[in-house]
Image (cartoon, rainbow, N blue to C red; front, side, top):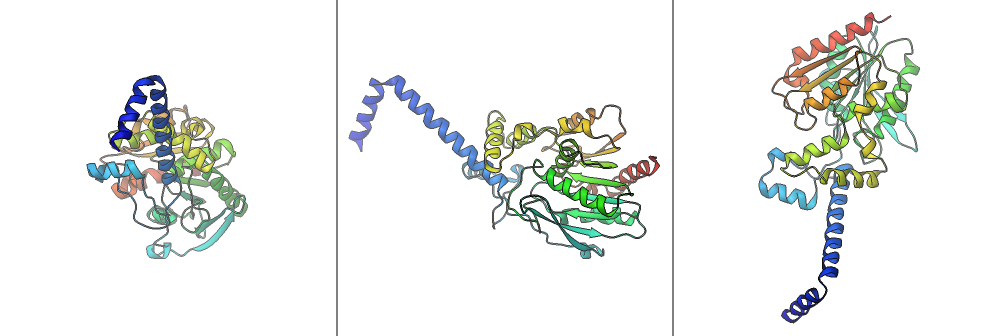
Length: 334
């Protein structure tokens, strides 16, 4: 072994430039291999096991382990139904494209003020929105809760952070319009779901009468970079590599996935709900999205001392008041 080390050392001394090039190539391949591993771990759900803790919950050794192996995100499942909240419902299935099938819970209301479609966030499922569904139902609305592809009762096992999920939103909106064409349709969307509805409006020309955006991010690169900053790591070039390889893993262009660029296509009354100390999608990001609406009808509600968590849990009274104001504005629109 010692002889081999000496021989290698002599070779490096005789060929310093070639050795440097080889070392750089090895480093480049290693970094990209690690980025691919992390991207795949984030976008393709694990079959079992527990989810990796948030960065602020990890020890130093835990952070090192995550950097070496990637996160573990089990496939999101529904562990509750509307019945647990005392709500009657029935299940529907919607085919999107290429055998992608979504599972939807519908909470009927008769008579109804309209329909509210609820969209969950990354690594979530429709059961995460039961509290919001109960409020909207009590206000007299038919409620649709949908599992994005890869989640709950829907098909597939991956996510694209709202990019391809925009197709899921567009297909669901089309089905709702077929059922109740003459009634208003409002979309309540959290985080990834917020990105998906804005993209559906922009790319697929989906027509809605009102939008509630909770914890929306402005650009995929920004929100991915936020995760690295939470790990006390530089966002560049780590976030760029992760987005590139994530696109390779699931076939989407993450560089172009920017809700701030979709927002100008949103011409309906809009409500922003955002946690004051959200580290994943900051207040500035949400303000950037609102700015792109210009002078159109929008309200921005900041929930104090709240992070990237459901704002209804932090301040249900304020949440209901803001949602009710949006619904009232939509009912007044001729």
